[in-house]
Amino acid sequence: MKVFISADIEGITGVTHWDETDPSRTDYSTARQQMTAEVAAACEGALQAGAHEILVKDAHNSGRNILASSLPLPARLVRGWSGHPLDMVQELDRSFDAVFFIGYHSGCGMDTSPLAHTNTGALHHIYINDLPASEFLIHAYAAAWLQVPVVFVSGDQGLCDEILRTNPHINTLAVKQGIGDSTINIHPELAVSRIRECAAQALLQDRSACLLSLPPSFFVRMEYKQPYKAFRSSFYPGARLDSPGTVIYETGDYFDVLRMLKFTV
Image (cartoon, rainbow, N blue to C red):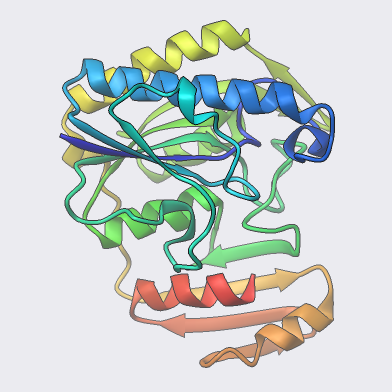
């Protein structure tokens, strides 16, 4: 069994302020260590459930956050960014049996995390077929395009609620709840323990039920905070301004959506 893990930091236990996500800030070191511990726990759970191959994509900021020496020996780590449209699931392909998202978070425009955003901080809102598009939805659709199910996600409660509405078969673990500009977190060691348990359980279930169904076509609406960024993005082939600050894009191929997002968001 091959397992792919994509890891972000804003949904990691305890992470509450942007300073904790920024490698240039002193608060970052603690967040980085917890991110590493949670990813390592997901790897350990996968191995307990019978995984023989694990590939981890470090998907935050520079892509160079996870302390590789703390991961189990069978895990391989993708660091940095290639520029490929698969982005946070770079190197995922149809040979994998399951995907985990660790440390994921609420999308832009949501009030369920002080760190809510999608891809960058440039957007007020982004919708795919009228669904608010978090990084979870964008990359779960990418996995579905490759016919690989996302079976386990850890992060904030708001994201877990979104996933429950999207596909209740996907296992989730809320390690914190966002309230205004604050978060309420479970103990970091408890988070590590529960991620290990949930990761193993997720692989032992009927994974096919977790696979999202891709719509036959895609209507993407991006509302930018700064109108000039929308104007610039409207020159992407097939994109157009709908109103000042808002760009829309329509296609029947989800890989087109991924390419468009890579170069406009």
